[in-house]
Image (tube, rainbow, N blue to C red; front, top):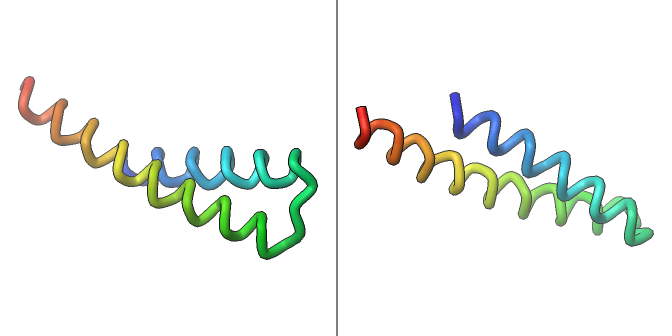
Length: 54
């Protein structure tokens, strides 16, 4: 669940950053895609960390 939330948050943040910089649709898609990947990785590490603690 943390991974999915991280992916959605990463996509939204990437989309907002590309829009703010004045990017076209391809730029927005690329930034959102990178955000999904990074958010998913951070969510994965957070999930592993939570499971180790519990």
